Image 1: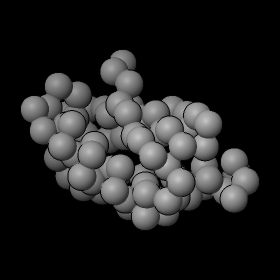
Image 2: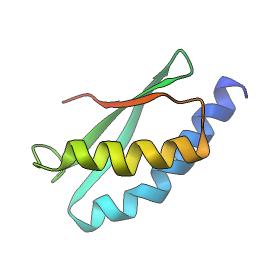
Image 3: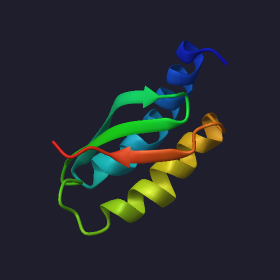
Image 4: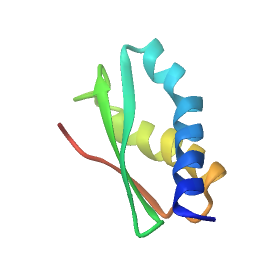
Length: 80
């Protein structure tokens, strides 16, 4: 899988997650993919400072991204 295909797959995963985040007043954006195995995202809106955002990141975001791009090992949130 090329870097472009990987990025496209990660974006597809985020598109699947985004409606759930937006329904709670939040959002997410892709910042970068490093070494083809680390995804950096930024939670936005109501997701910032939310007490369950780490759980959302691990169980929701990371799991969905791995479904589309199995080589991704970790997803981390970069605070604004």
